[in-house]
Image (cartoon, rainbow, N blue to C red; front, side):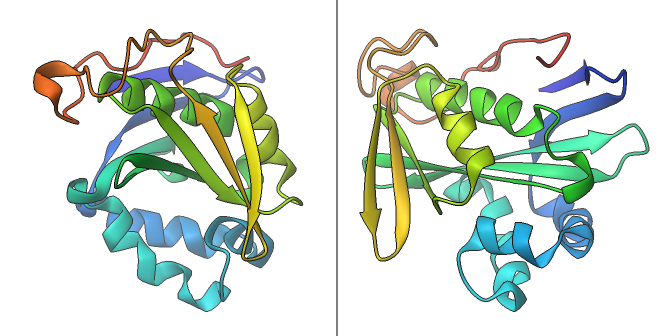
Length: 191
């Protein structure tokens, strides 16, 4: 899956699957992110952020989507991570690329993957100050539940009433979490 999209200001980006082969490029993106951005994504000491990437990029733990600029640099990552019966979504967008709809696009694609793999809901662990993530979750148009756990906000989206075509829990192909090849919609332009 590789899609080329055009941002409102006419910049082209590519959205594609990522894996452990992208570790160096993902680490370089971390290096271009502010401490605030890293802190909002990883919820712990900013110096530990790089330690998580190899795990997050491993297909054994879920799916990762990368956004590349026209120059080929990774500028955003979206993770869909298996967590028992639930599925976590997480996003990080490099500071210079924020507020362009990239996070919302990644989140919609991750939710589409979750639906295709039979997940009943997805949740994001964030902070109340992370207005971008909260807006992206609201933008899904799904029923949301909010709760506070250990000082962070957990926002859960119920996919059972999803506009993404979900019919029920675990009714993906063969009852597995294997996504269909066309699990995400093709988009020509970000809104």
